[in-house]
Image 1: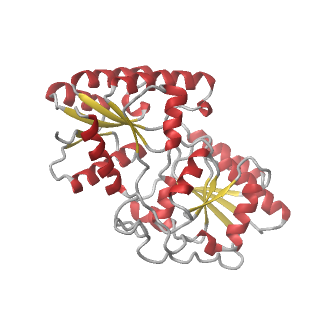
Image 2: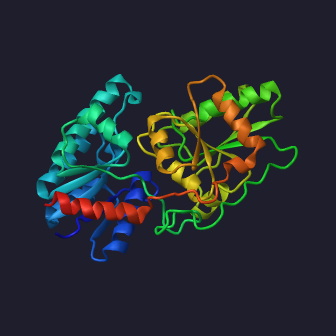
Image 3: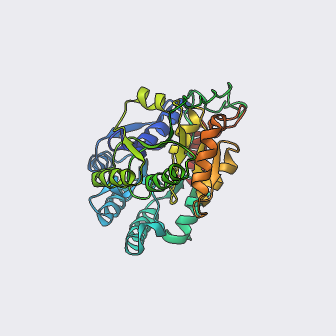
Length: 359
């Protein structure tokens, strides 16, 4: 049975598109005959399937990449599924944090997409639970495969041993007189935790634990959330904390920022799945991370790669940031930490599953 045509949909800067591209690259490494098509829009993907009638297709799907509304995204997936044997990786699954009205609309759309597909892939047991809780608990062809680390990344897992192939770099202490710098990687949007970081830093400044504090957004605002940057900046200023937004960085500058003398923070409380955790780990950094069902699963999968704090406990984030600031070595990935599975493992899991769920 041939490997499905993997269609990578959307702009390369989109997180789902970038991960779809990474997985497609890994599939081709394992199966050089694996077909791939990159298209800028979901409309072009649909046209390619309807006109070309490939036997099997795989798509990475989040609703905003596939339609101007939830309902239109679902309709498009249904049309594609009617023209081929379609499997899909679902991203950004519905959950209560979407809001009472939005979660029901998103669940209805994702239910239509999941039921139209021949099989569904999700990126964690947490996402499998979201699928059962909010989408459909009777789907019988579901693959759970965690997001994979990039082979060849400076501190990616060794595929043979599962261990980091070289010692993690020591995290340098901030120079004397330089205050606490906390970095959150990725787009700025509500719920990402920038506001929590600002509040925690303000608490440390107020208590005199640090002389100054800056929260850095490593990236720019998500589309439609430009105003959030202004709100966060005003809030930080009022609390005596600096807030910096780097804007989009090229790959080299983005990677270099991960090695600066900062405290890495992943403070989102409502992940579906997250590459931000892997971005830090791949660069040899152990991030301070909000304790959630998803992050506990990732902590068990890659022990020692993150430092969890309770986001509901008063003062817990401030304490975690201060501890990391005072002991910068705690933000370096411990030598021997496994970052498995990597993208080649992810690709192998897909190939085995596609053989099981054929056609």
